[in-house]
Length: 129
Image 1 (cartoon, helix red, strand yellow):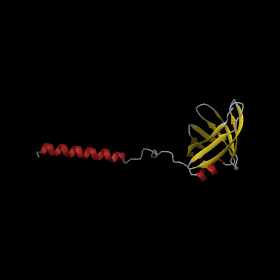
Image 2 (cartoon, helix red, strand yellow; image 1 turned 135 degrees about the vertical axis):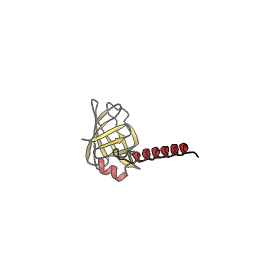
Image 3 (cartoon, one colour; image 1 turned 30 degrees about the vertical axis):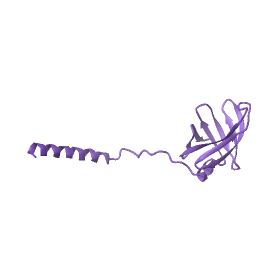
Image 4 (cartoon, helix red, strand yellow; image 1 turned 120 degrees about the vertical axis):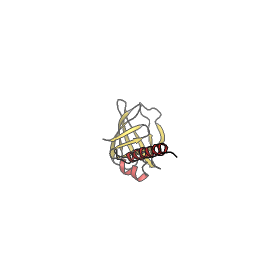
C-alpha cells in the first residue's frame, strides 16, 4: 500500500473511533418499553382506591373495592357496578347493565403497565384520583 492509502485508512479509522466514542456519552436515561405488572402488583395498586381513567370514547372514575367489586362513574352518562380481578399481568373487568350500558359488558382482560400514579390499561390511561 502506498503512503496516501495508509493515511486515508488511518483517518477513516480514527473518525469511526471518534463516532463510536460519542455513542458512549450519556444523553439522558435509556428508553425502555413499559414492563408488565404481576397479579399481586395489580391487586396492590388498585385495591381500595379510586382511579380516574380516560379512554378513546369515555372517561370517568372507578373505585376498585378490595372484595373484587367496583363502582364506576362514566362522565356525563351515569354509574354502574362491576367486578374486577388481576390475571397474568392483566386487569379483568365486567360491568353490570345500566341505562347507558343496556347489556353491560362481559368479562374483558387487558394488559396493565405503568408505575407510580399513572398506568395504561388497554387504550385507557389511569391516574390516582
